[in-house]
Image (tube, rainbow, N blue to C red; front, side, top):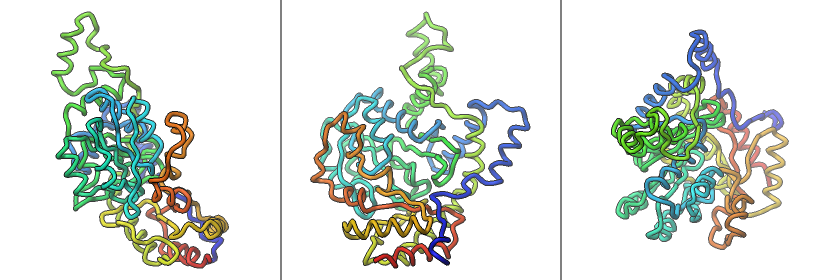
Length: 393
């Protein structure tokens, strides 16, 4: 295969004929299109697939982040949230938007998640939660971190927006924390076009999420006791219109839920294909030029992670040129565009960052990439991609 014929986009065919047919059949029923029975069914099916008690479907993974940080504030007060510098912008923005203080630690070069030793060292009496991101399909949990947070009774929040189906010690990530967030954006493992999910085993925060999703309306709470308490305290208000918090409208629609229900049926099978692809990619990549020792046990990578071994700007530029000429779509900085501490939105609030203790994420920022890995990608293209990258000198 010639290099210029590679044509590897970040994602391909993530909304299939089967998905479109499901939408057509749904629309032919003259249905309710706003949040209704399909949203509830998708939440139940997702909870069963993941292995949690409760799930709440919202309009994006970013909204899931936002509601999670709002719930921390309302239930436990504002404080410090330990966060990774390699993540999506909404993780950090949601912390700031809810009056919390982000505390950054560097990442682990093998998992691309937070360095657990540094996380534990930064825990203080002001720490409300550790907001951990599972990056690009890799697991970021360690038993040492899980045990330490449990011992100190500090909330663990998992961002699983990029790792649907990844596991830690044989159990799906997103089931270890107090809350976990998922995204169903088009380029992810499965898609509702736009959409997100909050997952938890905690009944109290589940009720808060239901209210926060819909303007703070108390009638949205699944708990009859919560409804009764608010009605008793506020007899002057119409019980249908009691607003508990200055909240949001981040509901999704029946159309998005229909897509989610059809896509969930093939998620596991598609993830097996992605795992095989990523294994093939790493095995055929030149380990002298590129990093191949990622912590892949339990991973489900929707992207090939490409990291240069050495900070060689000339070699980096030649690698980028080769991919562009071969029509291989890529994103430099890996997850979220690299080190969030360099972003202007954060500098406006925290000022210029001290990056002296962030050597790993800084290397990823300038010399790391991700490339699309989707179920329909052929082995021949993966091998040709490796040949292309290995040929760059």
